[in-house]
Length: 97
Image (cartoon, rainbow, N blue to C red):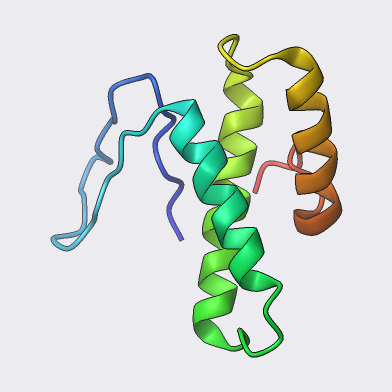
């Protein structure tokens, strides 16, 4: 799965974008909300299979990009808590995936 462009910067299309690619440009607050909602949905015991794997991958990409840009608009104490929770559920967000 291709990475989702970081919020706050213009999305740069790949050299040759697939005809059906969907690019999102979202704020850090929207990314944070989406990660939270995806993780909540992934906790449901009936949410298994290929679509759950896709949701986990998207949540991981969003969380990693959020952490990479480390938005100053979000309080440091709050980021510390959400980073710990995201890493508990999604693994290391600094591993380049």
